Image (tube, rainbow, N blue to C red; front, side, top):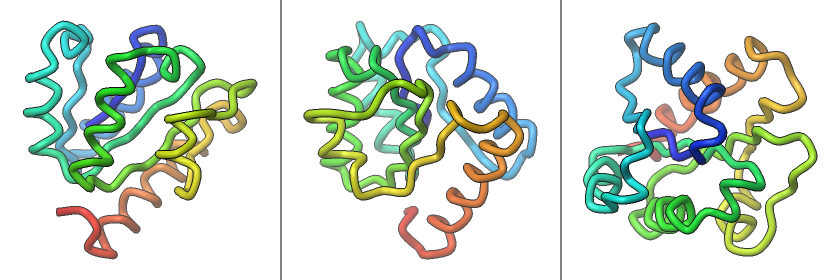
Length: 133
């Protein structure tokens, strides 16, 4: 599952497109961001997900819907992979509590292909460790 703020839809859509093109991954991506108005949809997707990419930016941190999704992922003990989208933003508050001690993939510093390769490596490591259900 990819959790993201609507303002980051383009980059998160690229990540989704690359993941699904590989045919190794099944990914939930709410293109229309309907989970903001249908939280049950987010909860259902989260229940079916073993890994959650939290694609964060300052907009993500300020969004109540994004907070619900991230906190639900943590509560349900999903494997969380933080994905940094905004070079100038460092997580604070509730978001920092969730992502602070996790390996973060930084799409803001590296070109897409390098960051994506790091993301795949991290996903595969999580799967190999058996953290993903």
